[in-house]
Length: 212
Image 1 (spheres, helix red, strand yellow):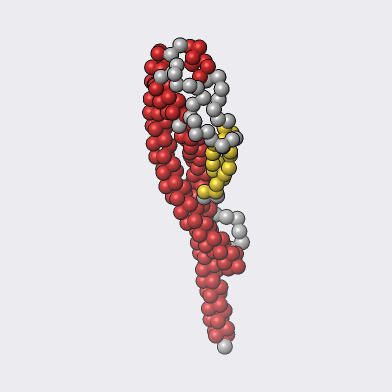
Image 2: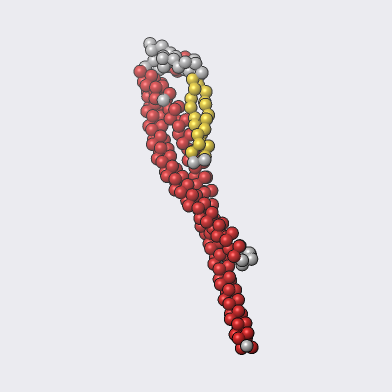
């Protein structure tokens, strides 16, 4: 490890020891942060997997019902059934702070009071499979929003984990060892200087005594 270019004085050693103490505390805090980020990230990944599986199952069931309904319903009837949307929905984007990361929070907002009637068509010319299909497909939106929220959060957290890892490694493998080696070098230099001074003093005393 390269020694820092400093004057080997006791004052400089004390300053470096304070820096070492600060760097060691910072390393511990960053290491704790890194471990917590990894824990949170693992939790989000599990939620992502569960939500994706739920969305795929719901979408598959909805499409199966829709294919069955469309095979029993004339095209013009389907066109009339979907001609008028029942609800108008906008996306509300907020954020929440997790480990100093501003993560997205996505919510759907219905422009008007949500209608109790889930369908905009009559039931005489349509089948129950169409109702089931639309029920399943309409329930996908909240799942999709939550999935997008979690996937974006996973990406942001992965980036923060990588940044934190680089800072931890810089302290652990570069700054702290360099400070420790420089402090050890200064201590060694000071010890040698003190021994040299003591030797000269003892020789001076011997000279003085021999002259007496």
